[in-house]
Length: 426
Ligand code: SF4
Ligand code: SF4
Image (cartoon, rainbow, N blue to C red):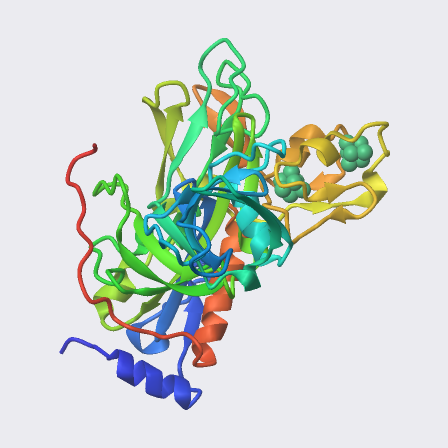
């Protein structure tokens, strides 16, 4: 007889403190140690990913003037970043609705984009706001998250079912979003994105668990899957989500400086209630089971294939040993760490560090410790120089989701509708 359980039964077990919740990383580690995990052994498994997700935008609404004074607002900047006013005009209400893209650049701050703004808001930093009414009146004031009646983060294309590795077969250095430093030529380096076996969609090949209305954690705040994201191709599905900025944690978000400009960081965790044996059987058992295509960074044609087991192997964290630092006249890591997480004086700020590994490449001494791995390609060893997904951060978010579920503070629910996918790439 098929073994099943319901969400209600899991909820009752949570209330009685008898539920077993494990992160996908714990599930993987247990299996790697030879443990066999059966349906009876686990009620919920939490998955997560933390990566560069350019398809995010902030939607905000707040009061800027008393009613009747101005017809409506026509322009706004936040820390110099232009927002899109509307769509509601809020005529004669003194209220502005605005959408800010994570990828929009500030006109007043160098290399400052929406991703940085969203993190600053969550850190409760004051934001310089400048708005203009249709009558030409300019209003300038400092704002913070608590002044906003509505502040939601919407993701138009998130948690993509893993990604790709990149190599540069050309003879030239290339500035690209796929590299923190200029990408070296002649297939001499490899960078990659994706959290491998921990990725939510990787664990749901038939889209049986994740659907419209599935509760998720976005940067630590409880949100929901709205449906499929843009370019939601069946072989590379992704999600559209929405979540309140209130409750987000800065360490899961922000921006990452690539050699072609900043890209926003976002983290998503998704629970898998183990309602039947098929859901458990679909959980990925090893990073070696998840393929990772190597693409030509110029043109994206396939050059080879490895697995996430070649690049992720309990090597998630990057640390700093101050005793090995020779205090160079100018520290390249201080100036070029993609998340501004490092100073020689204070070391790595772990609330900012993305565990990308760029510091290992930049520092002339063995002061940064991490095992970035290398792969064999056409008979030569090619080092991984950058991880554009932070598996360590994703594990932390999966642990946070586990803890919320066990405390009964996360709403476990089944989805209300299936996600639709394009059968072909658009
Ligand atoms: S580059 Fe390395 S050794 Fe030089 S100051 Fe920076 S951390 Fe220290
Ligand atoms: S791993 Fe190094 S370069 Fe990357 S974010 Fe952390 S300190 Fe910066």
